[in-house]
Image 1 (spheres, rainbow, N blue to C red):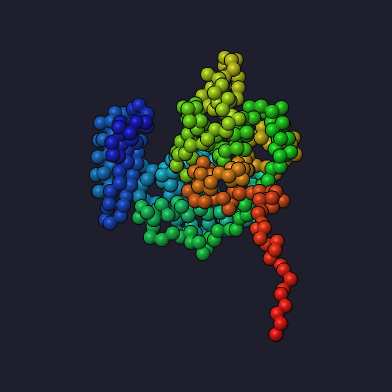
Image 2: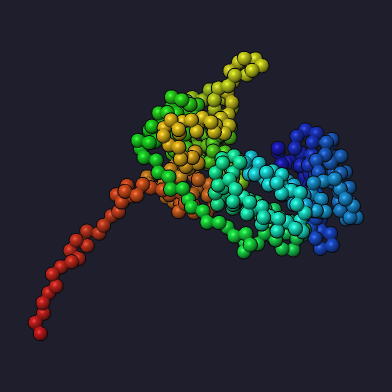
Length: 369
C-alpha cells in the first residue's frame, strides 16, 4: 500500500478497511491498542480518537492489545500482532505454543513452563516420532522470552521471568554437509526425471545462498534482467531486510524464457478442477517431491536448506570476498563459521607451503673453540 495514503496511527489495509493504533503514556507507562475498522478513513479517525480517550480514562477496549493481561495467551496475541510480517513457519510455531501454553496464568507461568520444557526434552515429537533437537527446544524458549521482552518494553512487566540462568540455551551443532560432484549430479538427474518442476530452483539454490521461503516467493516483478539480479523483498526475508540475489550465468536463459502466464519465477503446472484448464502456480513447500527425490538419489540426510551452506562454500572457494557472500546471503553477522563446509581432503589442496622452509633444516656448523 502506498505510504502517502496513510497517516500516523491509521493504515489502510485494503479499500474500506483500516488499522488504527494508539500509543500514549499513562501514569508513566506506555500503553498501546490497535483495532481494525471497516468503513471510511474519517470513521477510522473517529475510532482512533475514542481509543485515545478510553486509554486516558482507563476504560477497557475491545482490542487484542488490552493492557489487562491475565494469561500467557493474552501476551502471545499481542506478540503475534507485532510480528505480523514474520514467516508462516514462525507464525505457526507461535500458534502451537499459544495452543499448549496459552491458558496458563502469568503469575505461575515460569514454573509451568519449566515443567513443559522437561516434557519436551523427555518425549518424542508427535510429527517425526524422534527426540526433539536442541535447536527445536531453543526456538521455543526464544519465542517465549521474546514475548516477555516485548511485554517489558510496553511496561507490562518489570523483569523477564524466563531468565537465561533458569532456561539456558542448549548447545547445538551445525550440520557439516558436503555434497560431492557425483552425488550432486545424481541428485540433479533424479530431479530432472522425477520432479522436473524442481530442476530450476535446485540448480539456483546450489549456486546462490538462499532460503526456501525467499525462492518460492520470487515473482516476475522482482526480476531485473538488465543487471541479472533478483530482488528479495523484506516481507519474504527472515531478518526483515530486503536484498538482491545474482543470477548464475547458466540460468540467464531460463529467466529470459519464462512463460508469460506464470507469476512466479519458480513454478509448476496445475489443473484447475473447476475449468479443467492448466495454469501456472507457485511451488509451495514441495516437501513430498523433495523427500522422494533425495530418497531415490540415496541422500536421505540431505535437507533443502543444506544447499544454502553449499552455495556459500562454493562462492568462497571460487574467490568471492567474504563481505560479498554475506551481502548475497543476507546475513547481519558473519555466519561463515557455520555455513562454510568444505570436504576435508579437498581443503588440503588449498594449503600453500613456503618454499624457503625446504632449506630450513641444515647441518649445523662446527666452530672451533
